[in-house]
Length: 183
Image 1 (cartoon, rainbow, N blue to C red):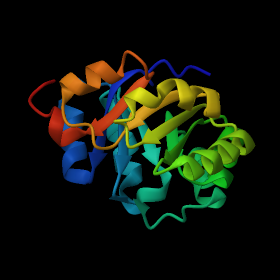
Image 2 (spheres, helix red, strand yellow):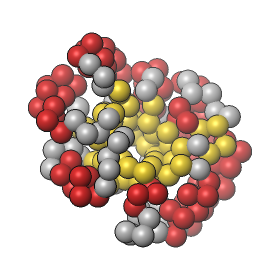
Image 3 (cartoon, one colour):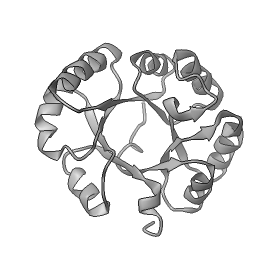
Image 4 (cartoon, rainbow, N blue to C red):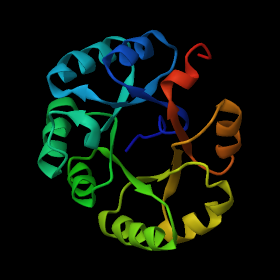
């Protein structure tokens, strides 16, 4: 599976207006969220025209069921470059459809890490997005517990900090609004 596009800083594009701005940028890939399912035909058509890749945040597509059936639907209909979800069943459905699967986990304490490690072991995603992404000091612990390539996401203040994260993480997702004007 070619997933080399999941490397470096990946903008999290929130909404259709920001998506239009992303299309005009020189960034090749985005995480798309908070877009209505009825707009996905146009979204994917425009991405193809601009030679852009889309990673869908399954849990945050309005009007789409954020379960394995919703994942199967968007996988079959749109064949996104990848998809993100917190749900192991969604990750498993994406894997069955040969879509790059990114399991998002939220780390608030050691119990959350333990439960997340169990979910990751069960679902076997291609990557794990760690939230918040500011856990630079915990990278060795996370790699040990999760056994997957890691993506940092959430609460990343600027590109300078993202650069530091990229020394230990495969990719960093950060708000497109923080990247505008820097592309």
